[in-house]
Length: 489
Image (cartoon, rainbow, N blue to C red; front, side, top):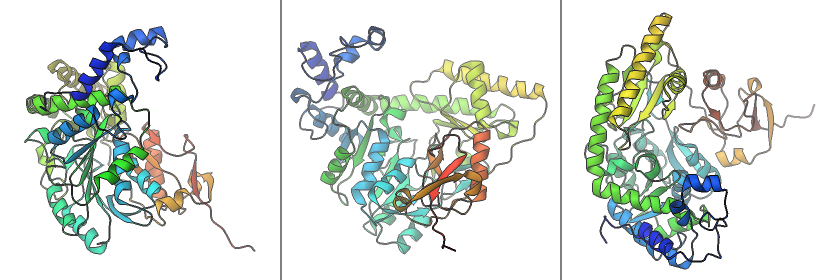
């Protein structure tokens, strides 16, 4: 088969054209049984392929037909030996990676700035995380990657680890020396698992960082929907033969996947792969050019700084993705959230994320020159408005501590707990997650000792309007901690 073929999407269209009488789910029966307004908005074509795993359409849990053909084409496109489609998002693929190599008590080496899905998998599997501290950028207030030196030290101290997990690239587009990390891990016969949620496109252009498969990693969870043109929640899990069993991966992924798999999501993966494989280089070249022009224009605006190649050169900043526009606004005296809110309310512009100091804008083949001009004009207007309002002091970067892990996340999550006011939790062991989402990197994970500095960091994020998530108490007035059993007097 050719990369121009779309066996799954074509098969679904052919099935739809037959217009079979359906005595199977979904109950809306090609839209006839659903709300008319919603049906009109979604469209009959989409609803006609919102189907279920009947025999002619193959089964994601045991693919033998058109889904297998689509996955095989994806494997060739990504340079993998096996590719598994995920309708549980990249979170489901990440959990599959971790649970495919780790069981109760097994060690896994992970950066502390991992996505919450990694820690969820560690709780589910009963594994013990060995944390590597990521390098912190004190100017931008963000975490970068892990260094080869840190990976080498972690493996020297923990040669019995079952895996090394790497984020490549980070949410902000920064990459470590992944190829060297793979070489170090493989010298211990330890597999490398890559969270490639923000790097589906890097495999298809030489001016972008190496992809996980190009670097020789064993498994990579890759969000096709984020930057590759498929529908939200659709991702792939790419794999190289060697240190991990593909049958084990298929089994774990199936355990974590709904039996009612969405064929709309699966078909969108099929066509996104075709476009990346056949047109990706050209599309990404145009995207990089557009992003670089935007970067230059933004850096010409007083008070703003858009990160470029100058960030490279440290052990943790080996390469970067220029299609990610990290725009520091702290010198304007406002938070990233302030800028995000103003762009939304004044210009109907939505950014990917904001934090205390930055906004992040993602440029893809779906963006146009008009879109670019709209953002640049709006940022100029924002700086002019702030200048007219009067001088503000630049914001000082505040960085959270990395807490000490006192017990395994699984033991903490399932321990006997109690809920107490947040100001009384310092020194206690937390039993729930706290994170700012996006990007979904935990400030606390179950099992860590709560510090005063991190409580202040949480409160600063809340006061800035940022989306702090995780605790059962949405207002964050209380936290769940491990219950202490004091001696009876």
